[in-house]
Amino acid sequence: MSFEINLPIFEGPFDLLLFFIQRDELDIHDIPIYKITNDFMEYMSDMERLNIELASDFIVVASTLMRIKAKMLLPRVEKDEEGNDIDPRDELVKHLLEYMKYKSVLNTLEEWEADMLDREKRGNLSTEIATIEENIGVETELQNIDLFKLLKFYQSAMKKVDDRNNAPRHQVIPYPYSQEDRQDHIIETLKSKEEFSFMELIMTDFNNVSVVFNFLAVLELLSQNRITIVVHEGFNNFDIKRISE
Image (tube, rainbow, N blue to C red; front, side, top):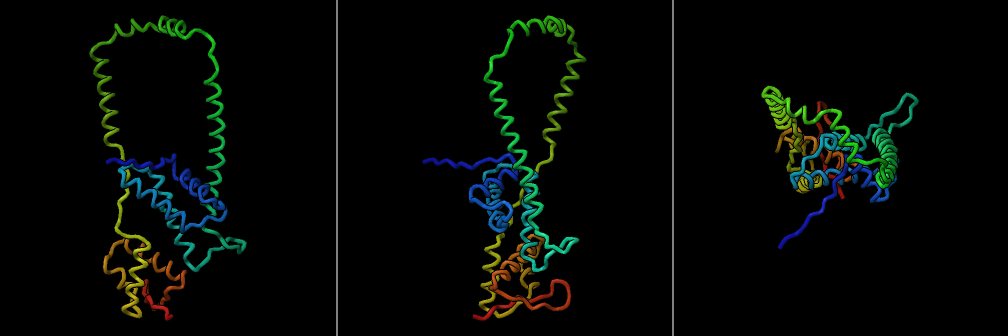
């Protein structure tokens, strides 16, 4: 018994974001960052499971989405010189609008190309090729090949092979964390104790990625009014506290 997995391949990260926006009929000027970030990371995870290497710009956009998501969860709002609130999504929306503009131009150029290919070319191709070969002396060029030219060609070919084999490769390392898992862990811990420190949470599995996921989980639960925090003196010195029914 066999089955087939059809996973669409996109030209770039902005092409993927536009697909999500058009699929869900979203307003490009008011993008739900939480949902579109989850969809983007899920697509990257599917590509990783199929051993399909993603370009580095996908990784850059994924980091950008995570940064915007974190900024929108923070209570502090940045302001411009005139005192207006700065939306963290503005830069992303600007790039998406630029991408849409150039993509529409590319579609027009592809239509022109298809139209030109449908037209009959003037002249006799076989006669023109024969004339060009006669002018440049193809047979004479082949007769003048010597051992030195063959060695130079061999060195050039081997250099291209080495460059291809030593080209940098980007790899996305999967971590055993997710926002839902971290949030569930915090809620389950608060069922057995009313309050515990953030340091106690991150020290159970201490690494940079774990700290980021746990911190984002705390911010998300705060935004949902499912927990509260008690801030103490010092860096990252706060307790996570259960909210009474």
